[in-house]
Amino acid sequence: MKLDILVFGAHPDDAELGAGGTIAKEVANGKKVGIIDLTRGELGTRGSAEIRDVEAKNSKKILGLQIRENLGFRDGFFINDERHQLEVIKMIRKYKPDIVLCNAVNDRHIDHAKGSELVSHACFLSGLIKIETTLNGNTQDKWRPKLVYHYIQWKNLKPDFAVDISKFINKKTDAILAYSSQFHDPNSEEPETPISSKTFIESVRYRAQDLGRLVGVDYAEGFTVERMMAIDSLDSLI
Image (cartoon, rainbow, N blue to C red):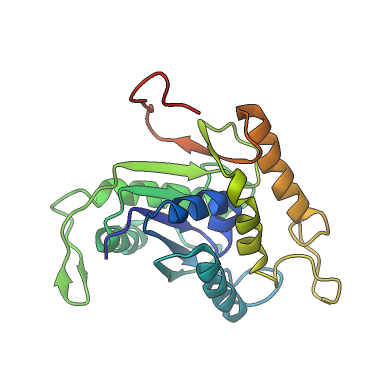
């Protein structure tokens, strides 16, 4: 299956938190979108890998994704080396996306920057014909995405562009709240974390609202780019 957009996240819920509104918007626009999670988030303070598996499936339904897979890399300990690059390359060649979205280039969690670099490098290497990969016994053709964008996460990085998600902010929060083990639950006896506070989801909405204010819409998500962007005409911006 060829996808228009393939989104990578170091952990289940990364994609929803960073780009959930954009994903929902692109799906509504008829694009085929999928998510590949690098790890199962097994080192997360709350919940478990098994719970996160179920939550990721629930979020897939909410967002209307074509596929969602998990590469099962070690949470906290995966690295950007040949073994991991080849596994990511297999996914890129399997789904042949035109656009790849991946983790923030710099962030509070060490896996986010590692995941960002790993996927970025794999996107380039996937286009080299002399790197041979097989999947299910079949030799894969080379494929390089046209565009690689990095969504913004915990750190307030300056975006290179913003996507208007005003009509999809509720879908974004619904997809985030599919991970009920990770966010505020007054009945939970598990330890508190930076994202389990009562106000965290409000802060997600506020951040999108504040970025939207800067670009003249109600809500927006920001992304950074790897190369200079071009527009077709001067009036193509909103």
